[in-house]
Amino acid sequence: MNIKIISSGKKEIFPFAIPIGIGLIESSINLTRIALFDKPDLIIFIGSAGSYGKLKIYDIIETSNSSNIEQCFITKNCYTPIENIITFNNVSRETIINSSNYITTNENIAKKYLKLNIDAENMEFFSVVKVAKEFNIPVKGIFVITNYCNKNAHNDYIKHIKKAKAKLINYLIEKNIIKEINE
Image: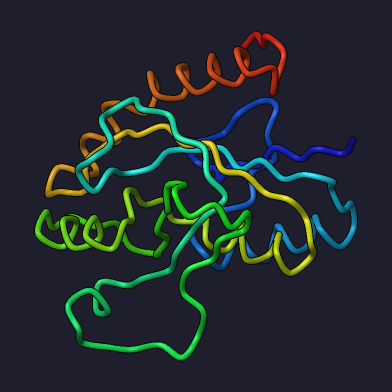
């Protein structure tokens, strides 16, 4: 079975994962390239996520559901004619990860995402799920929470990313997704 483990890049580089870029555009371009030239049987996207408040730091979640809901939608200042929630496995109780090219730093906005049953955010996952669905490739995201979506989001991400990556690697080993690695 051709399983591709992918990650975003920069601080989220893993020796066993292919980095696809940061944000919605880079990740969709690079994952499309992979799907066209070496189509996998399964895509596993790994990385960090920011919690809107329900999930705790270092929690690990698995999901195939993502949304692309911008803050202007939350504040009722815009609309979209495109599909903005993708449910790959049609499991309604799975965690939904929101994606945007921007990180939420307003706690009140974060609470509004929770009211929509969206628990966390990761910049790339919506494009990963969208590309996977387009190429009919099963997809899963495995995320470790590094921060809450508040004014300290970036500093907390920096503070927690090293330990979060170690916890994520241990989780992947425990789940037999990867074998033990030496970094």
